[in-house]
Image 1: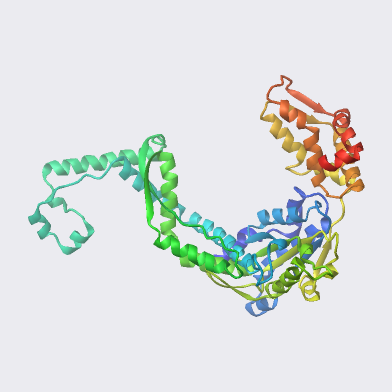
Image 2: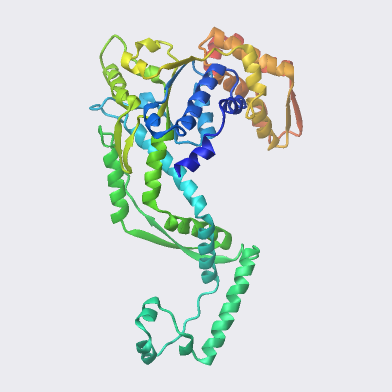
Length: 476
């Protein structure tokens, strides 16, 4: 199963990975190349002999750069590209063991849960045809219940033990009338089956029974309680009585529900859990954002003590250790870690030397220029201008951005970042929202079906705000 997962997700070459990232992220070529090589090395490692495979460890990456330049976006897009187990966590949500909060081991448990979802989805695909066949059989039974036959006590005693256990009725036991009914019922089943295959009964209603459990939520942030919470949750799932609800749905809705039920019955949970652990160990990627926020200041008091402790707790996880999860023990020796931080008030050298050594590849992301902002507004598949055009199209408005308008927007974003706090591409969100606020509000009521945004349009709505320092602090 692991091999098939690798074939599906890891066969992109570094150049192809960078090309895919270029569709959504402007610039930052060094960072893209580093993550592309790291991902490809996972694929390469799986193809060397076993003895060498154990020796090859992932080269963890640290991305350094101001906020809003694409660090998190690279990780998010990478996750969608690879399809491998991937989680993004914020370093600030963890605390040192012994303090109130989550411990760092929980990130590995989250990774395994992610891997479990990937493996389960793949296995559902493997059993889909059989699940659909079984679901259709159940649908036929709902639409045309089986014929009940009365069998005398004497006849029941004459049945063999095998027939008695299986509940089968021998044709010889049936009267002529019952045989006619049985044949008619069989013909009707064939007709319904053909109608179902042709999609002629999708709107017919049937009754289905769904089962739910009322499971209490366990909210505890006690140190080391993550694993115990999941165990308690699982225990409650077993002992809590099921609540059965009967409802009327269409055949189309019932089929989806029944296919899901039958898929769950066909899945081998132990096999899936074992494959998920193996997948997480060999192909897992953990992105640790805001790592600069766990740098302790010189004043060792309050939360700073815990921050230093989080770094110490991260050391064995990143270097390679064994973590106990509800699905078994997970080794982190070959999990790829990518860390990112702005390091505005600190430097990577302020991290513990041991932790620095766990991230041998350093990539510095560059500040965005005006030209970068122009490309961000126009080139990516989901650029802001395209997003607003799609939103206005729902109101029947054709929104057009002229090149001089894009140039003006990029100029305002770059200038504001230079004059105030540099928040990178996020500055475009505030400027675009300010620019189109009036149009977004009036869109349902205006008769004008085409709106052209040019440099004059931008200047009228943005210029005064950018010039007013006090106002721009709140809006931009």
